Image 1 (tube, rainbow, N blue to C red):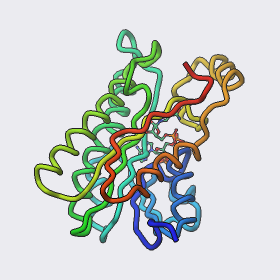
Image 2: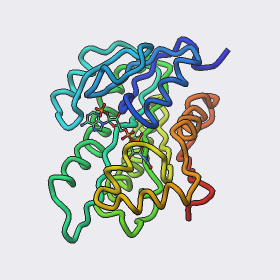
Image 3: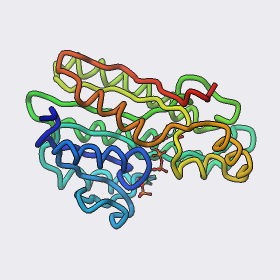
Length: 233
Ligand SMILES: NC(=O)c1ccc[n+]([C@@H]2O[C@H](COP(=O)([O-])OP(=O)(O)OC[C@H]3O[C@@H](n4cnc5c(N)ncnc54)[C@H](OP(=O)(O)O)[C@@H]3O)[C@@H](O)[C@H]2O)c1
């Protein structure tokens, strides 16, 4: 039987891409899954829906006001726009900052008191763009650098506080999800070329990396998992 059987997980970004694939895998392992989304009707029936717009701090607080105990939090929700520092739209920067950085951090903070005394795990989805700035990284890449730094800051704080909650990140390269439509907005031809030139990662590939972390023995602390398509530089 899986280590995750009968455990409870809160997953943001549960309606699409990586988050959705992860939710389905968790349910397949006998876990209970609460999925955060603005579109509850987009969730599979096996996922308990929690409706929230993560750009709104009050809605993030509402998620945790209703919540009981959880064994894990997986922050998958994210937004990616090609929005350069030189001439990008600050409204795009703000949305990316709110969802990718602020909401992820606040979900981490508010989740802590929902873990049982024996602890649990938090996984934050970062990106290869959080390890090096690609030419088209714009404002998205800094938000993913922040995810890595937040993950490590929280890891050290939890150790100092002697709380047995582990925190890790996962850093994929291109994954074939709807997020790429926003990232390649206005460059649809480049996206089509990228899709045909590359055997892109699929959401399930990243879900498996997250499951490796969630299923690791208690004494094994994973820091970050980097993964990309064999065809990506
Ligand atoms: N795809 C890639 O190439 C790639 C590469 C590296 C890292 N990542 C990271 O992987 C994570 C998942 O991305 P994905 O590719 O699976 O994207 P996706 O298929 O576009 O899914 C994005 C998810 O984020 C949620 N979300 C976005 N804005 C939200 C908001 N304001 N409030 C609540 N939920 C919101 C969406 O939920 P609703 O719309 O239903 O609310 C959706 O479930 C992101 O953090 C992304 O940065 C992706």
